[in-house]
Amino acid sequence: MREYEKGLRRAEIPTTRISGSGRVALPGLGEVRVSGSGYISPEEIGVSGSGRLPGGIRVERMRCSGSVTVGGDVEAEEMVFSGSASVLGGVRAGRLSASGSFKAEGGLAGGSMRFSGSCRIGGDVHLEDSLVAHGSLRVSGDVSVRGLVELEGSFDVDGKVRADTFKAELRRSRSRVGKGIQADRVEVRKGRGVDGFVLFGIPILGRRLREGELHTTDIVGRERVYLENVHCDNVTGGDVVLGEGCEVRGRVRYSGTIEVHPEAKVTNPPERVG
Image 1 (spheres, rainbow, N blue to C red):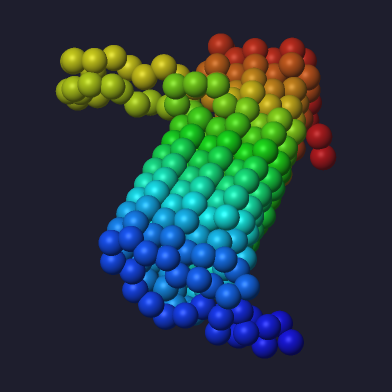
Image 2: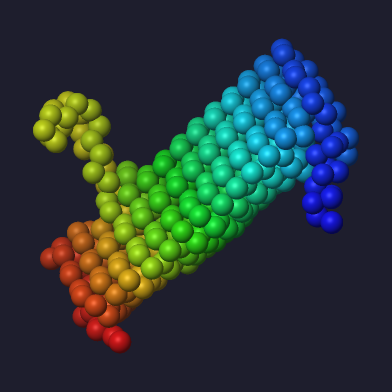
């Protein structure tokens, strides 16, 4: 029945091209408005320039460059956005790639998603494969990924992050995970970027970028935890390394090995468990 209903929805989308400025009505959904060029079919929607799409669209592929607004929920097996994209609802995608500015007022669900630039998500993120974000990430809910979460830059997550592997490189500003991090492997490193001309790793013209910090509650890495510039309440893991710039206000528990940098601050002596 669901495949039949899906087929009906796709049959409502006409096949047409837009050049210059134009509008196309999608029965039962609304109107597509494009200034630039566009291609619309039951399988694919493409926009180059600026455009506005109605919510409720379900297609195989969506490719948009320029400035695009989607007026509600959207679903596609493959989505590619470059420039400025705003979704006034939730997103479901097998694969999503966005560069520039991306915003979804609802949550994200699907397979794998990759962001470069600025990304704001107004709900939870649930993915089967991976979440990779380089730049600025803001999530108003939880992040749950069966595979890899890789973050580089600054990030602010109101809820909890769960993943098989969590990797982060902190740059410039303060990052936050409101309700803690839980994974098999947790790795958080301070950024080592340099602004300006560099010779043999030494900044000749310019300056070193300000190091970032991560603030959170509890960190659990069932197999391994490696932390730099992290301020948290408690750390629990197998093999645990607390590097430079770390501060643990509560307890540190480990079942394998423990290493604490001389400049790390630990309120209580680490406890071996298990």
